[in-house]
Image (cartoon, rainbow, N blue to C red; front, side, top):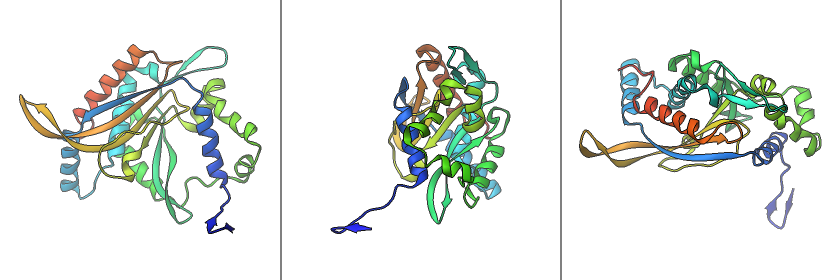
Length: 259
């Protein structure tokens, strides 16, 4: 359908679901931290692994592995507060990642939950991401799901209240933490700040070359722009800062990547 040269298209049910998610997430007490992390060592080790094996490991899988290990050391960030004011702290780190794949002939980012990431290797996480990317349509919904997306918006948005009402149900459906990679859609540095319904979300931005002190001399290093988002209703500033420091240490030391 067109009008005076403009094309008018219907909003897809999936897009309505995204709108519902963002509107609900915007009502949370989210705090965003913009962090720069030196990933020179990690990228060099990834290149070495590719040269030795002929296969490149996913950078996102590496970050997910570091995230899960950091949460093992600071489990209070892997928690949700329910409607009774109780805090549910989960042992398993179930990471919801944004994966670029083909849906109905188009390349787009879709969610996929990596279960128990804190008990898995980078290789295991990488293999599951690759399998999800090669799936024909990992977001195909059953008929009941399709009908649910056609309900009035005020009813549809109730599902995104699950983290505040029933944390265990939210864990089963959507994981406990989220990672989204804006950097996979472009080149160069830069941050992205997005609302979220998770207590903790990492948004992987771009990687740029910047001067940094290394071994007493100024050298050019690969620097990752990373946004760390917390729900301040669950996580206070000091625990959040300690978690970010541990995450930085693991990423900069190329945790999980053999020498």
